[in-house]
Every structure is written in C-alpha cells, then in structure tokens.
Image (cartoon, rainbow, N blue to C red; front, side, top):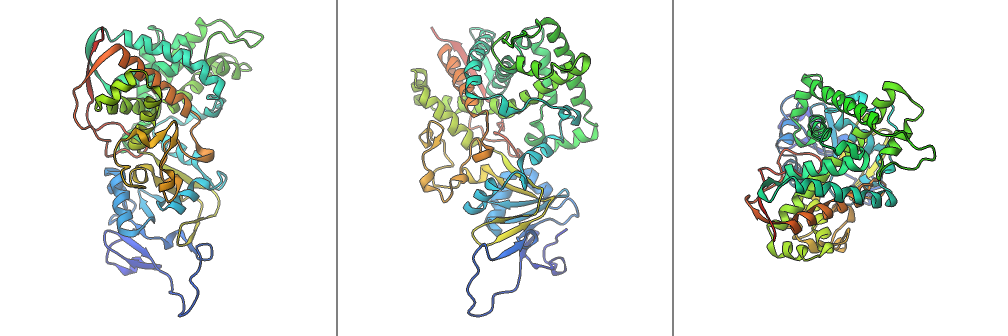
Length: 474
C-alpha cells in the first residue's frame, strides 16, 4: 500500500502528504496544443491515490470513521477525481460536475449500480434470500399501484396513532420506523401481516434482518461476518414461519385474478402459483422480505427528519397543520436532500471510459466508481448546507440553473436510476406527518440533532435520540 514520502511506492507519479499519491505522466512538449479531455486518456492509477500506512487496510479506517468528512477533506487536498484504496476495495471517486454527470450516465452493462448495491447488502443479508427472486421494485410502484396503497397507508397510520393514547413521549426515528413497517407490510405483505397476531413478531424479525445496518453502522458488518450471519438467518426463518401461518389464513387466489385485498400481496402470491409446498411459502416470504427491506431502508428516516425539521420551525409546522400539503411535500424533499448520506456506487464490469473536466480515465473491471451525495448536496451552491423548503417546487429542485451540473444535487437519483418508490415515499411521509400534526400538539425534547457520522449510505439516522412530547389536541 502507499506510504507518504517514499517515492519507490510511486512508479506512476509523486507522493504527497497523508498517503496521497499524485498522478504523474510526462509534460507536453513546448508549444504543443493542450489535449482535450477526450484526447487525454489516463488509467485509474494515474489519478491521485489515497491509501495508508498499513497494507490492505489502506484508507479504510479513516473513511469509515466519518465518510462525508473523509471525502470532503480529500477533495480539498487533491481535487475532484481520486482513487481510494482500503480493506481490499478500490474506489474511483468523482465529485466534479462532468465526472458526476458521467457516473450517472454510464450504461448498466459497463458500470452496474445493481451489482454494487448487492455487494453492500451481501455483508448483512443471507445470500439465499436472493435465490429465485420473482418480484422487483419496478413492478411495485406504478401510478395505479400507489393509488391503491394510499388506503393502506391511511389505515396503518390510524392504527399506530391510536396506540399512542392521549399523551406521552415518542422518539421520532423509532416511531417512524414502526409506522413505516406497518404501512409497507399493509401494502405488499398483506393486511394480515399487520394484525396483532403477526405484526410484533414480524417487526422484531425485520429489525434483526435489517440490511441498512451494513451502511448505517459499517463496522457491524464485521460482527455479522464473524457470526456467519447467524442472527440474520434465524430472523429469515422466523419470517418464513409467520408467512406460512398467514398463507393458511388467507383464501385461495380467485380464478379470475380478482384481488382479495388492496395492495400487492396477491401479485406476489400469483408469481409463485406454479410452485407448491414449502418452496412456495419460502418464495413468497422471501419476495416480501426483499421488497420490504428495500422500501424501508430510507423511508422511516426521511419521515423522521421531515417531522424533526417541522417541529424545529413552529411557523412552518402551523402552516402545514392548516392544510398546506404542498409545503409539507417540499419539506420532505428538502429533508431528504439535506440529510442524504448515500454513497453512489457502480461496479465496473467491462473496460470503459469516464471523463471529468481534465481527462478521460480508463476504468477496469473490479473497480468501483463512486460519489457521495452528502458532499455535493450541501456544497454545490451557496446556502445548500441549510434547511429551506423553498429549494423545491413539488419534486423539482429550484436552483438547478445555479449548479455547474444538475446531477450535483440528488434526492431520489437520476435518469435510469431514479428511485421507483419516490412517489410512494413522499405520499407516505405526507399522510403520516399530517395525521400526527392534526391529532397532537408536539413539544420538542431534543436539541440540534445531526446525521450519524459513520453512516455511508441511505438517508441519515440521527446522532442522538429525538424525543417529542405529545398531547391530544382538543
């Protein structure tokens, strides 16, 4: 690995401080026309390289301590394009307007976001969960599906708020997590899954299986690996047993395909109609698990930050309480932008070129291409480090013309990688937040929560409990 001050570790460049290897190359001859970015083709190793003093570990420990600060500091030292090496992983990182735009634009067959995301989840989730999968997110969130889900969302919110009683205290993230479980399961896990007989056991099992732990608390991935995913495998077995009970309770699918209840669960059942016995139960349960984990990894955190930001701003809260749903949705989008902690990863599958403003880089298979939303979302224009719902009109970011590249601000992704659950998520946040504000007076019992520093994916969790006192309004 790289050691600062030792030129023998720098065959292609010179070594700078802090384990950074600066890309070299011969200077152009006098009077030569400077090459355009397309003409100047370098390899990934020609970019500044960030390593460390320990072989294999490299920059990994420093990165995982505070990923957002690590990328910000590295960017300030060496520029917007660099190569990070740590824990045996090589990340080719881009933060310039041209580099980020081209990261999103690369074809999936050359640079796969799906393969990279699976690589992160695989640290936490049992591999057998993905075998034979028949249901995918893009099948779940068509416009007509979301309209059907709205009934389930409202019913789930009513049940959860009724359980709060007339007064008390809740923790914003724990409350929203439980609510998101109920809302999601009602929409694609069957309403039976939200009944008292099954719901508490399912919540406990899903929390144990939670794939987001692999990026919210990256060091815990080592514990998961060391235990052979024993806890996660036990949780998956529990969920499969619960769905065996649920399937025995439900009537068989109608011959004409008419749904037995609003939601997506009947379609998941229909996808496994050609299979019988334990294999059918297992297939249905595992498809529900994958759909639910994918939707829940960020929804509850986005919901909680929207609530926290409103409670911190009484004037906004009162306007929303008086019926301003457009303002509420703008607050949701702004909360997701400001508290986004996602690292965007694309695994290079075939040799390809990626250009920034200064050169094109030849990227080789096995490399991961990366950028970090929390770095660009808050620095791409003045004032983006502060909460302001006027940054949005509906889902549209209003300051795009001030940006050097529109991809520098991201909430639900771009282009082919735009999140199919975006409309469902915003609807869920609006319904849940409005119901809570209309039913209760809320008192903040927290102060200045910030994003969890170690997180390297998804919408941030808070670095402290966000407790809220509530009492029923007259």
